[in-house]
Image (tube, rainbow, N blue to C red):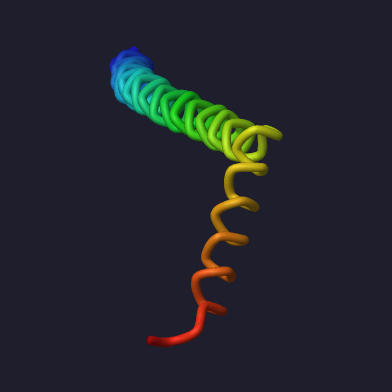
Length: 82
């Protein structure tokens, strides 16, 4: 009878320690998931900002302005030196 009680106590302690370990692992896993989620949100925000910047830079009006600026620089470079 004492052996059975000892075995049950040992099993109870092991289950308790195992349960606490699993609980701690579950909490740690949730933390890692949250970090990954925040990283994904930040990356998506950066991607959207880059796409918006690219679209702004490559609009026809901005491209035309850049072409005119380059043409003007070439004309200035081709002027005779005084």
